[in-house]
Image 1 (cartoon, rainbow over the protein chains, first blue to last red):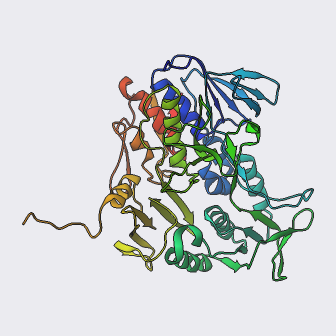
Image 2 (tube, each protein chain N blue to C red):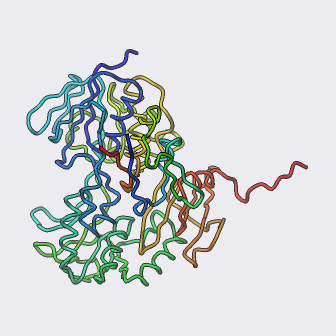
Image 3 (cartoon, each protein chain N blue to C red):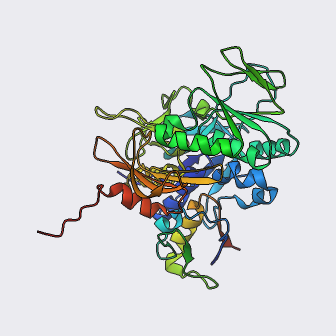
Amino acid sequence: MTAPRSVLIVGESLAGTAAARHLRALGHTGPVVLIGAEDDGAYSRPPLSKAVLKDQAADHTLGLALDGLDTDVIRSAAVTADTRRRTVTTADGRQVGYDALIVATGADARRLAAPGQRGELVLRTLDDARLLRDRLAHAGSAIVIGAGFLGMEVASACAARGIPVTVVDTDRPLERILGDHLSAAITTRAAAYGIRFLQATGFATLTGDPVSGVALPDGTELTADLVVTCAGEVPSTGWLAGTGLADRLGVGIDHACATTVPGVFAAGDVTYLRGDGTRPDRRAPFWSNALAQGRTAAASALGLPAPGPPQDDYFWTEIAGLTVKIVGRLPLSGEPTTAQGSVADGRALLTWSHADGTSTAVAYGLRKPVTALRALAATPWPPSTDGGT
Amino acid sequence: MKISVDHPRCEGHGLCADQAPDVFSLDDDAELTYHFEGTEVPDEHQLAARAAVNACPVAALRVLP
């Protein structure tokens, strides 16, 4: 296989910039073109639900620099792709050719508003975060739809400002991801922090135009100054229509970040790892995976072996003043083994063993680096005390 | 090339040390040490250091102009 002359990356995202950087690190000297839809360029999203909601000074410190990379950046959204002719067309009418394409367009917030219903708030982009921050400054009450990580982070930001907040979901906070054990502890902690949780029997509907509340299937209606939808994300694949690259879960990739179309690779939140006979398809839109996949996609686009696995399952969140860091497979179920501390005290190091021999390690309210969690996840528990008898 | 570290913003994830172990390290309590505080990052570590700056999920690292 000959190395491609030009590489086109669509998506000025963490995965996209990591891919651009790694192409150069691997010695690629041909053209690298990066197409981005947002005027702000690439930036770090994790602080949007934390630092940015607190302080506007954070807005200008989030950029992911492309310094010294010799890339041609086009700031106009990709609107169509033709994988046979190997071209991508942008909203401003440019047609960009490529030898290898890396799809890194990420995901958009899932929205619940009815067609034409205005004023739904979500949190995915820097503009979303700025708008939400402005609205928080004047809100006397808030409703958050969705008790996943993002929903609980937004609720924490409301509570930290003294704004009474109700979180609505069919499952308890983080239950779908972290299981009963941690969900119960986090729900108790969140309540003490001023976050009310309301368990719904089905999907919530946004009411008002502009949106001013929610209606639940049992007839309950709630209203608030601020209603924020945190109902997950939708892979940004509209521009790939007709290519066969994308389905409901996003763009399917293998362990080399290759798609089913020759010359096309993908990385980050737009992707899912295709299953095989033993594993189901799996979306894992985490920061660390975008980083790992950006590098893997770059190597694969150049016909080189992957630098490592395309999954580096590390996730973290900060809820009601408590940081939770996780390495390993999710969701969790059942009871953990406690390696240190206790959940009741708000400081614990926990592991869950899975049937396939892997483990998930969780630092609950404890400051631990990812390396320590990876080591713990890789340690059989209890640790062998074999003295060599 | 110099890097600034916003220590209060650092949450101790340690993804920088994954990318550039010769430039950043963390102890078991996730306290960060930047090995070239106040000096230039040596040429041979600059590529990795720039990747580390981008890997920081809380944008606590910046390459100084």
